[in-house]
Image 1: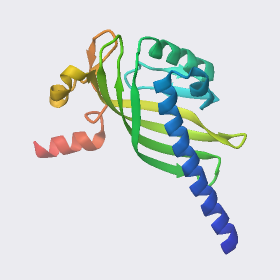
Image 2 (image 1 turned 90 degrees about the vertical axis):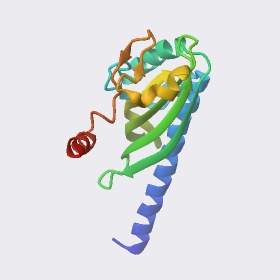
Image 3 (image 1 turned 120 degrees about the vertical axis):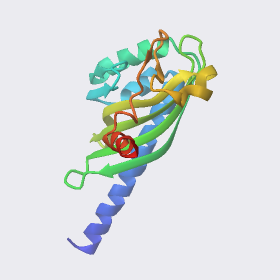
Length: 186
C-alpha cells in the first residue's frame, strides 16, 4: 500500500470516528428532546437494542421506535451526557465499527427524579454514507431515585424499575475480572 493510500485510510478512520461520536451525541439529544423521528433515524432498519436486565429490548428500527415511545412516555424532562467513547473501525470493512460509550443520565420516570450510570456496547454500520447504530446493549451500574443516590452503591440491587422493583445492577458484579478480583482478595 502506498503512503498516500495509507494516509487516505487513516483520514477515513478519523472521519468515521468523528461521525460516530456525533451519532452518539445525537442519540442523547433525541432521547432528551423526545424526538422520536430523529431517534429512529439513528438506527439501521435491522437494528437491535438490548439490556442485560431485559427491561429494554427491541428488534428492528420500528421495534426500537415503539420501545422508546413507551419508555419516553412515562418520562418528563431528562438529560443524558456521554463521557468516554472507545471506537474501533473494522480494518477489513471500513463501513463497520464497534464501540463502548460511558454515560450518565438524569431522568424522571413517573415524575420521580432519578440518576443513572451506564455504558453502551455498540455496533455501528455505515448505510448510504451515514453511520447508524446496528446494535446497542445498554448496561446499568445504577439507575436509582435521586433521593437514594448517596447510598446507591452500597448493594447490588441498584436498578430500580419504573414500577419501583429493585433488581441487580448489570455490572460490575457480573464481570469476570470483578469476580476474580473479589475472589483473590478473599
